[in-house]
Image 1 (cartoon, rainbow, N blue to C red):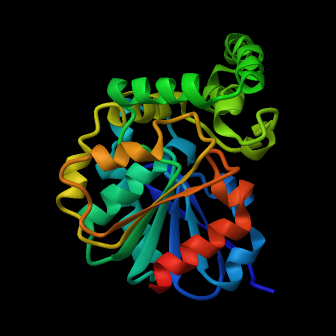
Image 2 (image 1 turned 90 degrees about the horizontal axis):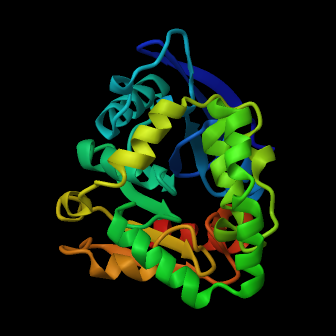
Length: 283
């Protein structure tokens, strides 16, 4: 019913994939275009014109990559380039997991482009302090079956990475599955099929930039409506309550938790996800 179109943005040797589909307000989704297209519920296209866009960590590159190729600022510049080429005017922007920081950075650098931010499955950063909160939540609230499933899964990670070091990111996500998914036995590896990955760039973002992120630089500067949506059974990051300890806080934010949901609400509770997103953007 809603035609899917695919195009590419060329920038500095990278070929960023863009997928567009749907009707209604424009919702810009930063990350791997293919991954997020796979996890997004089909019914969302009745309500939003979704624009999925790669960042450099998940894009083909015609040359060897280096660590200078990626930063939050560089990703924001790429997204702005895509918006200009796609004739996207003011839009809502969404980021899931680490991509939430990309959505925030884009809103911070291009506030006249953005109507509001939806941060899905994200903690205020990936700092050691917040990892400590994550593990405390895991120890206190995760059931024993989930913990047993995690021990079995994580034991396989080293072998996976040895076989496919260039696919490290997808293997890490997969083996963290009992922390990430409401169903602790869900295998997410097929969601990452055929998606390019630059391990060095992804390691820099998740291991460095997001670990040392100063979230207050964004909370004190961004006055746009902001949604922070998480799953109650997401043990892969600090709990949603960690956002209440950020000072200064967002001046216009809604914090919402979904029960029976892990790290990826759009796939795990699609109807509730769409409902929350529609309420946020409508009101």
